[in-house]
Image 1 (tube, rainbow, N blue to C red):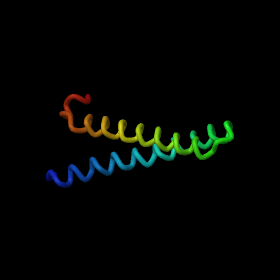
Image 2: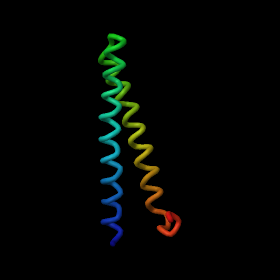
Image 3: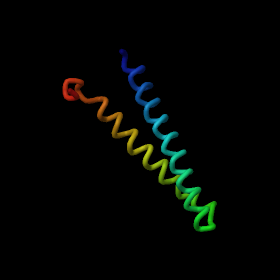
Image 4: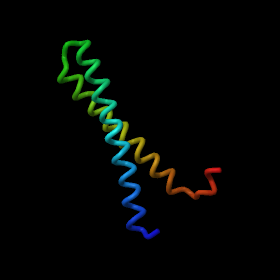
Length: 73
């Protein structure tokens, strides 16, 4: 596999994780916002937390995929 395709596959992994965690964050933020009667703030905080989690987990997963495959027995 050439270097260009390898980077593209890693970006796809990061982006799909980001979208998943953004959705989870919005869902949790909506629930908290509804409970506290401040829906806008809850959704904004949920989205921010979801983006942070998605980027962090996506970067961690892509860093682990760059390791030597023999390490993952």
